[in-house]
Image 1 (cartoon, rainbow, N blue to C red):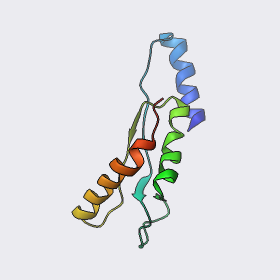
Image 2 (cartoon, rainbow, N blue to C red):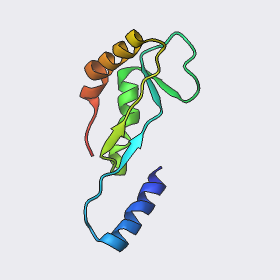
Image 3 (cartoon, one colour):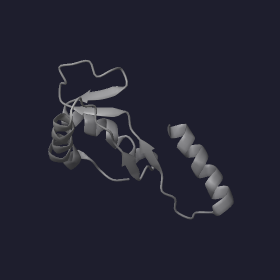
Image 4 (cartoon, rainbow, N blue to C red):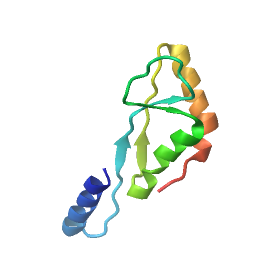
Length: 96
């Protein structure tokens, strides 16, 4: 992804100058904590620190918007995941 963003910024600068641009990404699916069930290979799961570390990588790529999705099997599990993210992961995130 860093190469794609660099390409985008380079070509944008050539056509639009230094006019600011917002860059957004959709992350792999997240699961805060140890799921105890098979969440699939394309899910990032683990401690809040691990998830924040992975998400903070986007700040170094000039990404300003991150869309996250949560792996879940029920509405209650989704709500629990959202709460865990807000309480435990979000405070560890940094901006671009």
